[in-house]
Amino acid sequence: MINLYTAPTPNGWKASIMLEETGLDYTVKPINIGTGEQKSAEYVAINPNARIPTIVDTDNDNFSVFESGAILVYLAEKTGMLMPTDIKGRSLVMQWLMFQMGGIGPMMGQANVFFRYFPEKIPAAIERYQTESKRLLAVLNDRLKDHKYLAGDYSIADIANWSWAKIYEWPGVDVSDLPHLLRWIDLMAARPAVQNGILVPAPIDKETLLKSAKNIVTGIKETKR
Image (cartoon, rainbow, N blue to C red; front, side, top):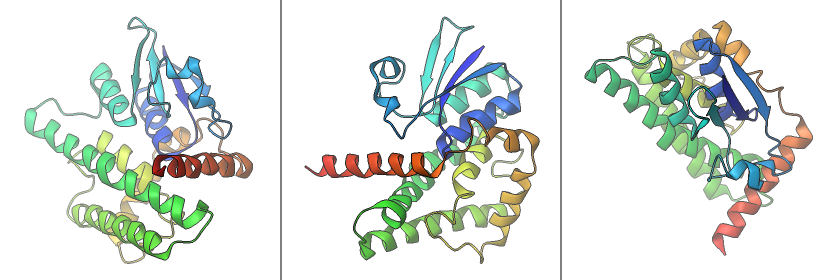
């Protein structure tokens, strides 16, 4: 049994979609990021970074895994699904997974903060993160021009990148000129496991979303001190 500690965010969706794809038995443990539950001592004991998602594998000595990319790899290796076993195929999947972890996620995350939530509008910051987010989405688009999926067959690389790419409207990024990206977004969205995964846990309400955003902004200010 997998215990999934999560919230309805792009990083959270990665884990829940993967669990739906693999068919593993799992129990959802919702974390209220609006109230800062992820910073509780109980949660930090399994995830020292105090972020979501986290999984605990009760069939493997209650082994905990944090960081969404690491969770995808762990579940792929546990089940033998959505990750090639040959060195080149595995490397290709890992490259596109790291592309999301190091690029798409951080840039779109910052674009979200400065475009939607930051108490003062800083045009230079908004433009910087929107422009870089668009550039990275264009990289996906170029890759998908001649590939149905990012790394050959459907894989954890698609799950990771799609979970962020699908929210392009939220940070105000226009992708109308990226047809291959849009084709792939729709292709992924048609998968039953994806449709089920993005509903785990229940979609976040506006009030909680705003509280979560406030926590993010507070964290940015504290980091600057």
